[in-house]
Image (tube, rainbow, N blue to C red; front, side, top):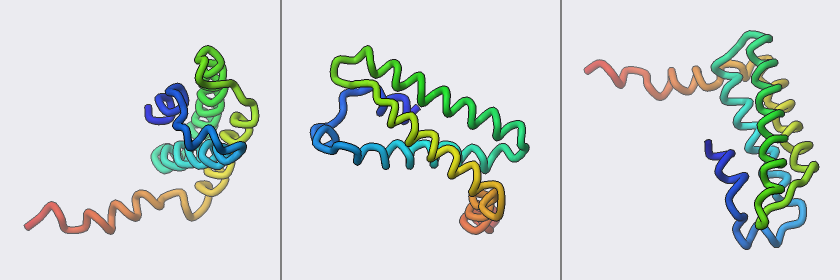
Length: 114
């Protein structure tokens, strides 16, 4: 939901001054999205659906930005989104596939029983 809202509201003035600095933001946002959900869904088919869904979301949001006079569609944003998705997908294939479960185990260890 945050990605959806931030993609469609008018950008802050500080972001308007950056030429391509927002591409890093796009890459990181979609990296986190894919990385987060890849921690929950582990089968190849589920992750493929996630990748396709996030790619389509990025494309849809760029098209919707074209209807907002304060925003503009930029296909380079779609490329940055795609790179973030592919990086997260690749990294969560190996040892990083269960990093959230590891942190949950460490943080919540013994907190429920006293």
